[in-house]
Image (cartoon, rainbow, N blue to C red; front, top):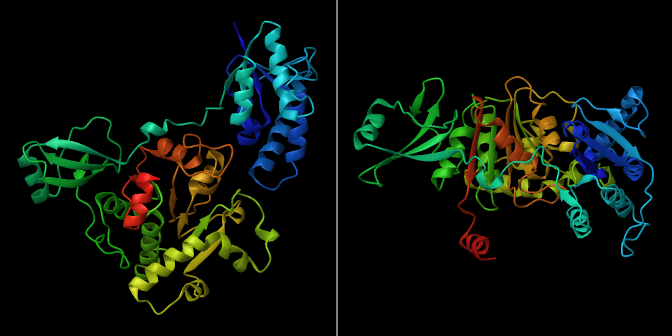
Length: 430
């Protein structure tokens, strides 16, 4: 029996191409979804762009027939716009609310004996659908299993002679299943767990190679644990063009990325400048609504970046302040809103709080990278401000799973809080 998928508006606002992912089933859009798309199409953010894209797609589908009667989709299914329902719903559902009108379309179709699935990014809407006896699901095309998110490293038990040989020859041929390029391996002696070696898998050499030697002190920042050592090894390697640093607050994600960027830009001259950005939450909201110049508007959103930069400059005992670095064009702070459409070559780009981006927004940002540009994405998948994203559907988690296995990609999940003893205690107990 074919299914009828009734889509909530937020599904199309999240991914305009959602109409084509339901195989050979029927996709139904209540007329209220079209009304809501019309409201959002005026917005300048990602939701507005997706609304306009979905409307254009519907307009193109009109050439295949009448939308009210059903038109064929690319995946083999059928799309139908439903204008009204002829079944009255439970009295406790207010018919004045547009969300309830959309739910009533699903309820009406199910009352007629159809196998109906209500698809929504809104948890509350899914709860109400379930209460009505309608099967409700999240849109999961771009979801990952956050519980099994790629960590970036693994342990491997080896013989003592192999570890000794690795230190001597600086290479170890290994046969490890499910190993990815730039994945790190903690080699452990089978007889003595304290006898270890940290290595990195090289796809080119088909084996384990040692880490860089210039990562013990990067602009005054010293790694405090194995995960931070791995992070610096990835950040300082120009051949790794995309690096993701995932971890909870206090694990050092942003601090490590900024220190590496300053070292690469100012000391090594490997890049023209370091560009630092983070989503103006929600992403795409024009910071012109705030008073002042562009730089003054950015101070509010970029304060965590300023804090980390001031800390690094204090440790480094540099005479320059942040303003001097910006004036010298070595450092640029930018809102993600203004990165769309640009091509950014020869820069070290740090995008903080990337967990607040959708998979499509991540694609848009990463595709801005020009020749000889390195991009760093940092964030905590469990600390999300967007109402329609979660730890499994956000862009940061998505890019980690999709990019693993690529030679120019590296990732590490940081788990140990190094901010302070109080921060560690709070993270553990609260």
